[in-house]
Every structure is written in structure tokens, then in C-alpha cells.
Image 1 (cartoon, rainbow, N blue to C red):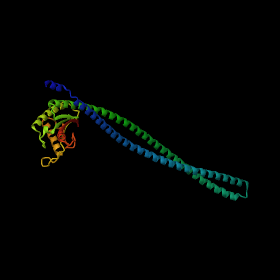
Image 2: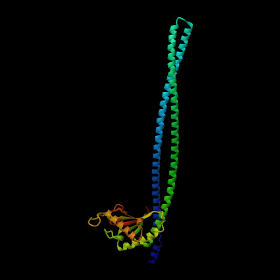
Image 3: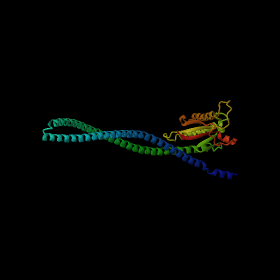
Image 4: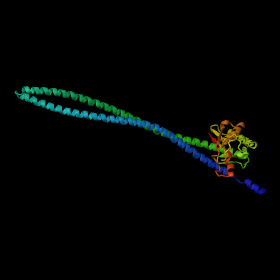
Length: 342
């Protein structure tokens, strides 16, 4: 029998190490997903703001382009009118020359020719004035078109600068995300190392009791170890176990670097049997929260800083075993401890 016991003592339990490795992998994956979502959110916010500026600039360019097209149309109309008037002026000059020749050649048509020449001279003067005004309007339109072209060029330059700023911002966001990933990954690795140390110490000081065990990344106490049925007062045996845990936590707290903002989360869980409502607590929500709070207060009394503790109650809604058996209910009534980052 002594030989069999020695063989059992030499058996190596690889399960906790495997669980630690698996929990670390899961935490890393969750962290990377969180960083990806954060980076996507920041990038979408940055791009949304830049898109608004680009849309406003494009709208101004479109308006100026339409105005330029309208001015070009007006200029073309004036040029057509000017060409028509110049053609009419040329005809008038021709007619005047013809009448002047008649006047020089014949004496009988002298009076009529003089009248026609006077009329044509007056008409010619009017057309010259109109032609001069048309030329002035064309010159003014040319100046306006040049000014519009300069404005469009300035807007296009501003658009180029904005697009370059967008590209620079995207590069900065990508670099920030990369550095954030590296920094947070290092934090997760450090906290996982301290969590492994903490669980190892708890295993040593709590003597591997059957009703105190590790499940994933949590240390689990069955409720019967700490509390009477339906109560939230820690019993004598439970206080002894919690005092050991508090000592290990205080010792570990002195080793964790101050830049790691760690907390010990204490989660209360019950089975699915409803309370009668006649006692102190009306339902399992209140009972699970009251038990978690009782553990937190005891740890504070034994030297654990209150800012490093969190109490949470989950009632019967996070069971380890969903089966409708007494064995499953016994397993689900528990207090879980998880060393995590705030």
C-alpha cells in the first residue's frame, strides 16, 4: 500500500499547465480582437471627418465649375453678338463707301446721297459704341473666368493637401495600433505569469482539497467550504482558508509592478433552486452577490487593498453543469476567484 501511495504522489498533473496555456491563448485572442475593433473605430472616425471635408471641397469645386461654364456661355453669346455687329458694321461701311462714290460721280443725286450718308454715319457711330461696350463686357468676362480658374486651382490644391493628410493619418493610426498591440500583449503575458504564480501558491497553501479546485483561469471554492446553506456568513473553516488566500494575495501584490492595474474578481454563484423569500435574501441574485461581498470584506480585513477587489453576483445563471441533478447543483454553488486587469 505504501508503494501505491508513493506512485500516486509521483504522478505529475499536467492539466493546470495546459489550462493556463489555453487561457493565455484565449486572452490573447480576445485582446487582439478588442484592439482590432478599437483601431477600426478610430480609423472610421478619422475617415468620416476627412470624408466630410473632401465632400465639402468637391461640392465647392462643382459649384465653381458650373459657374465657370455659365460664364463661358455668356462670353460666347457676347462674342456672337460682337461678330454680328462687326459684320453689320462692315456692311454699313461698304454702303457708305458706295454712296460716297455716287455722290462724287453724279450731281443729280446729291441731296439724297447726303441724307443717306448722314444716316449711315449716325448708324455707324452707334454700332461702334455698341461694339466697344461688347468688347468691354468680353474683357470683364475674361477677367472673371481667370479669377474662377484661380479659385478652382486653390481648391484643388487644398483637396490634395487634405488627401495627403488623410494618408499620413492612416499611417499614424496603423503605427499606433501596432504599438498598442505590442504593449498590451506584454501586459497580458506579465499578468498571466503572475496569475500562474498565484494559483501555484494557492495550490500549495490549500493542500489540494477536493472542493477547492482550478477551472480555466479561475480558482473555485464550493460554497459549502465557506457558507452554511442559504447564508452569507463565512464559517470558521472558511475563514481559515480565506486567511491563507489573503496572505498569498498580499504577498503577490507586492511583487506585481505598479503599472499593471490588477484586481481580484470574486464571483458568487448559486444553484437553480429558488429561495423561499422568507429569509434575508429574496432570490439567488441577492444571495450570490451577498456571498461575494462577504468574501471581499473578509479579504479587506486581512490586508488586501479594497481597490484591488471586485465583487459580482451571477445567481444561478452561469452554471458549470447545466444538468438537472443534485450533483450538478452542488458543483454550481461556488465562489470563483479570478486575477485579472481592471
